[in-house]
Length: 297
Ligand SMILES: O=P(O)(O)OC[C@H]1O[C@H](O)[C@H](O)[C@@H](O)[C@@H]1O
Image (cartoon, rainbow, N blue to C red; front, side, top):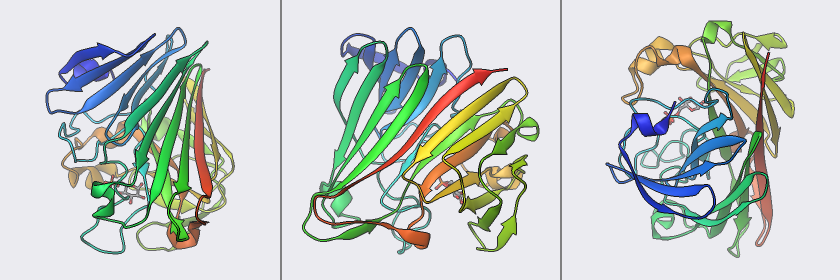
């Protein structure tokens, strides 16, 4: 999906070789990265990668045509960062998947060699402390080249020890869900809603409505499609989630069309804090990463 065709974007400024800043009509800010290997768009809200197009290939990420172009509303698609919890919050007044995806991040640095490397950050501020009192520094390192790399680094900048949940909640574009197969998630699954356990084959077609925690997911996952393979390397996770809302689920989401479920699958690298949070002492860091590589077949 070409973001420029999707939202009315205005070019604001050039930030150096191949890096430009854009704004939407609704007031969201975006960074576009272009080099000979790929084109990528990142929203400063949430440091959310929305589009990654390796040269000559289709966009590997799915972004909803109905995404809501308004600051403070989570963007449907791309790679949302869920933090400091995954899924439902302990209190009903707090947002699903935490607040990092609706917070404004900063672009701290952009370097270019054969590829681009960008650093985004979010530190605890008034907005985050209205939902969670801890002191933290988050950074997202994004590499844009013949692969897309994301590394989310959490640092505890406070005095107290705390536990954290997180996810790189990637929405991968597929030609057709029924012709896609996922490999590497392991056979042992737990339903996100009911917590019911089930077994899966080593390679399977994600069915519409699937919402499972795969607790034995391997560091290398593969999304097979009729004309391509997508390799997803993950690290720093304790589970992987595979989600597709199906027709019924999509109909309940204001920012998704009813037939959108056929064209994406979410494969998420997750620290599920209900299973086991990552505990950080003062000054400690944790890194959660995904590297996404496309091979036409
Ligand atoms: O609608 P959102 O808050 O973005 O959540 C979208 C989905 O995220 C994850 O994949 C969860 O496992 C699903 O249960 C949830 O529906």
